[in-house]
Image (tube, rainbow, N blue to C red):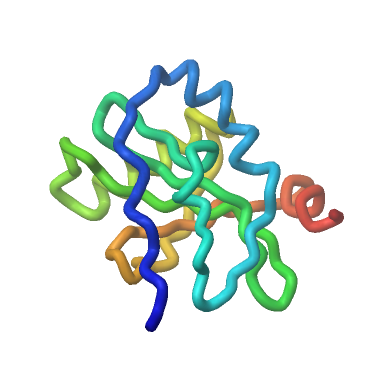
Length: 135
């Protein structure tokens, strides 16, 4: 019998200041993509960012085969969900920029998880891309 994933963490909004302060913790560990993923970043508070607006971002560094490491962002809404996908994508990108301090950061939509959570990858360019891949 297959193991079920644990329920999501309770929605617990924090101030923007607190979310920004703990953002670097989300990038410390590199997660490996495996099937099935019995342990996921969303099970740990350091990867979960709950905003007063109702938005929840899941942010983690992920290694994709063959050996590409990217920052992945998933999003859901506890309340006040945007009406359109474009509105949702703009809100997610804007809040990622706020947390990361990278006001020019752009996100590429990669699809929906089995739980219907939209996911994006942060576009990395130039020195930022090289810095993360030199590890």
